[in-house]
Image 1: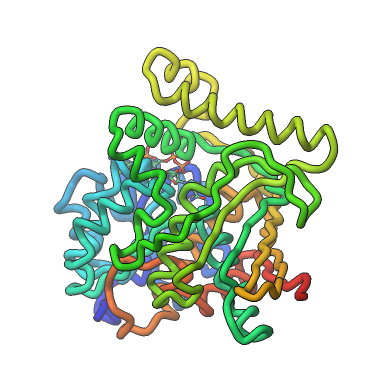
Image 2 (image 1 turned 90 degrees about the horizontal axis):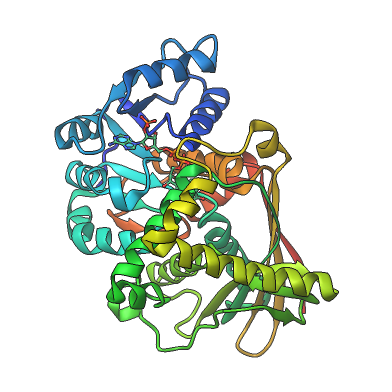
Length: 413
Ligand SMILES: NC(=O)c1ccc[n+]([C@@H]2O[C@H](COP(=O)([O-])OP(=O)(O)OC[C@H]3O[C@@H](n4cnc5c(N)ncnc54)[C@H](OP(=O)(O)O)[C@@H]3O)[C@@H](O)[C@H]2O)c1
């Protein structure tokens, strides 16, 4: 059973000074204040950066508690975990800095959520710490940002509606990004470059990254062939060209783990894939080929030393990202098409009201942390969960009432 009382804080943001951590801190400060029912603190390695973050928050923030901890300091991390029921971490790339904190959470029975999209690191954490998390009661929930909440909760919503309307879940679901307006941050680019680097050096890892069930428990590794868009293709359902979606590599893995963690609720033969719509006609076709080539170029250039420096030179550096104006002007609209075994079809839509990677991500992450702290029964067992399997309806409610997401059924036939 996880901790229910007896800690100083409900929630600690570790990495509050990161690009996304600063937006998250501001969101929690504006939404929940610091003298209300939510007892929370900010944490990181640099006392001076944390104190200037507090000054930037403005009047009333002086009382916000601060904890100093380096991601490599086991003692400081354990002490931080002992003071709180939930830790939200934005310290990444997680494959480089994240393990000691997961270990400390698992050892102290502290609930945890983060923004990793690094599938190989998640698998390592599950392998190393799942048994201990089950014993200590720590609920670990990775991928609580744009990857993978809209996908994971979008499929959860579609399946729930399908059960209500058709009396069964959809066996095949396709996710299509219609619009995603917003920029990249240095932290995200650093994580993508790190995956490319690790994969280039390790053929076993390349094989693992290609496996859609790589983070599912062994008994849930279905033999059913999963669709996976490799290049430009035309989609008749939406009458638009498609290109591969860069986040699909993590989102699809999380959706399959969610299915497994809900006792194969979406079915043992469930298939899922993701792609980006690029429009109609010649323009849409050219964009689909352009994105495919651009992605291949980025990963190839990031994988090898002679060209990696060039990529690093021209992308945002750690701590940099879209301006507040760009975050506000950002938006996303993604569509899901589900088909039951006998061909009944449902189309749904998920939208977010800010740029996907930062404005919207920080709200989703904050509400995932709040959901762990306040909505999930203490009896829910410890282990490595996913947003949909751990936080389910409670998170759906928080995303729509607080985090600016919408979930809607567009069509059933
Ligand atoms: N899932 C999603 O949709 C999504 C969206 C956005 C970001 N992300 C991920 O979230 C992570 C953060 O992104 P970002 O752009 O905000 O990154 P960032 O600005 O580069 O921040 C990295 C943070 O890590 C901290 N850090 C590094 N080494 C540390 C150490 N030894 N001890 C303690 N703290 C340490 C830095 O502390 P200092 O401030 O003291 O330097 C900084 O706060 C990345 O992994 C990124 O991929 C995911």
